[in-house]
Length: 352
Image (cartoon, rainbow, N blue to C red; front, side):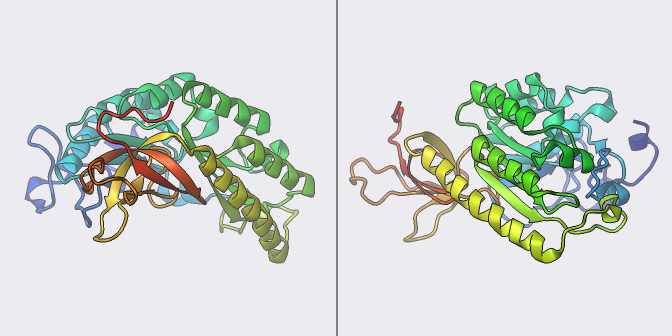
């Protein structure tokens, strides 16, 4: 807790002198240590750095240090600056977003921060990334599913589903715990987006462990799953564990789970046919269908939604959307993790 005031340099934290020539925030706020490199309507907002967890496979704490939260005042100033640059969606990033505020003495700091960011003038959507399942509280689920401007999006770091293997990874939970969490989320927001990553081939993984992971994924109905084959990271506990699998076997297991995930993700997209979504337009090219992301789709890794305007009669066709605009649409089809949607006329409610 003393680290932020100890003069330790933390990437992405701190204040710049006005004479540095860098971009600065509003006059009432701290300077902003960033410069935009593109005109995308979304931008990452780094809320913390470092990590206090000691997962057996991860080297991040060894080179990024302990978890340090950025003060809310600094984040709000940067959010306002980003909105002034044309950003409409904030993507909150850190090594462990659910830990935000614990070093500031407030375990509910994220729950308080999200509505404040969503209220920043010009910001239409706020999205949180990298949530630890073991640290998600009911109050946080309520905020993520019930706050205007905060999208019901859950980037849950499951990593696996076999309880014994998770303990070997220095992780918590298991399929029953994870499914209960998903039920709690979907009870509040049935259409919430959920994504995760899993590691296949961790030392000691048995055939039963792998089958358990597959059974969990089939029941979990996740929108996107990243599948990664285990590899040693120098200096980590896992690098010294016994029970290592050879790379040929790991690759075979990755291919097996990848094939299952591809099928499950396509099914989940098909489940969304008929739903009404709000799409943040990111690309509008002459002769092409406008393209963006629905609420359940995070930037760059979760698929996209194309707005199909051909076939809509001219007298009912909405005006061409602009980059950064939110367009209400009804999902017509799924294409893998991607969606195709048709625009709704202004004032239309969409299918029940």
